[in-house]
Length: 172
Image 1 (cartoon, rainbow, N blue to C red):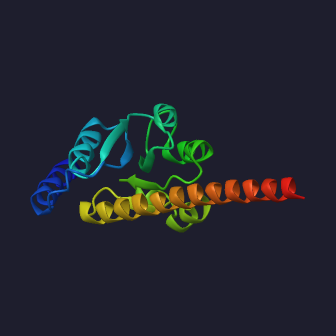
Image 2: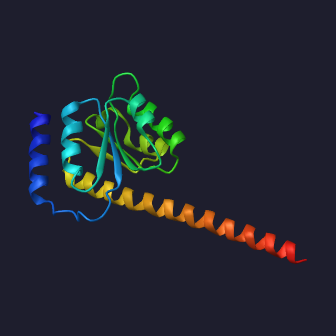
Image 3: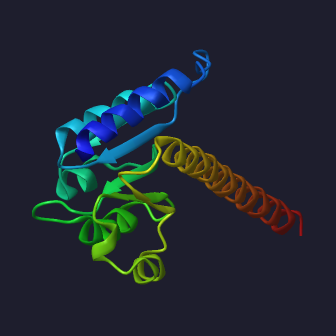
């Protein structure tokens, strides 16, 4: 079954992976899936490297999301608010957050349409190797950190320019 496959992939992945550096603060990621075993499984896989928050529905995910979240792994097929409906709500709250669609129902959607419409960070089939998802998340987290650093740098620069302008105006 797909679930057994998933569990086997997790086991293989957990034995392969290297120990993370405990001295570094871990980046925060959010896993959104209405299947508890998937939430638990991904939580276990990623907790070695990241602080993992989980949500069982889109509405809760939107509430849970903050600027501190570096990446969202988003299930597509969920009751009530599905992943496609949740995505724009997450982006409205945190425009820069990278979102990865994680789904077992790839064939139901035209992949190209999904990618063009949402521009997700990635689109991963639940049957695929966890390493692929792990690499996507690592890249997403790095990209988000760069975006945040750039924002801080830009704000800092604007502040310096404003201060300098003020000093020049005073000097006249």
